[in-house]
Length: 201
Image 1 (cartoon, helix red, strand yellow):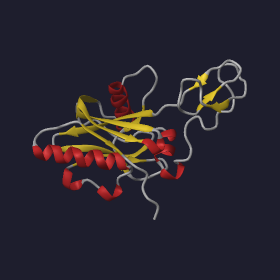
Image 2: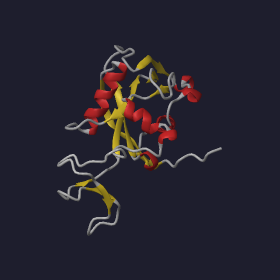
Image 3: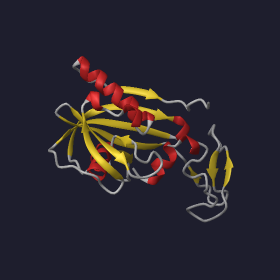
């Protein structure tokens, strides 16, 4: 997970979105303005010179639930925020790749584990950070895994060993809860949810 993902998943930063600091058109370099274009219903970032509309849309985070026998692979974060917390491998999609390719790549980059995906499992919308998180069930090829640049540790956990109080993000907690509930039932479904901004204490 790159630093942009970390920043956006921290509720302290929910007021800041990709593109908030854009002041000039990336096509012609003129100063941009915020208007509702003809035929639209939303405030957009528009260049008054070349009329380019710079659309800002939610970003997709793709990840995996890597499994070996009855255990799930988790990574201990080596960067802020949530330094030292456990997470499922996930991160932003890159251009020119599918969600499946992104999930496999992020798993390899963060844990060293090669996986085969076994189906989309959860899609979780997080409107307050303009993201959609998609997790796949995944079968690990072997036990060749270990920490990478952004991970302090990578370990396999049985359900009763999951460090629930030390998990990093709500999407990770939700996905793991759904995964183990389905596994106990003996069949895996596909789950869609939306998270709201936690109330301030």
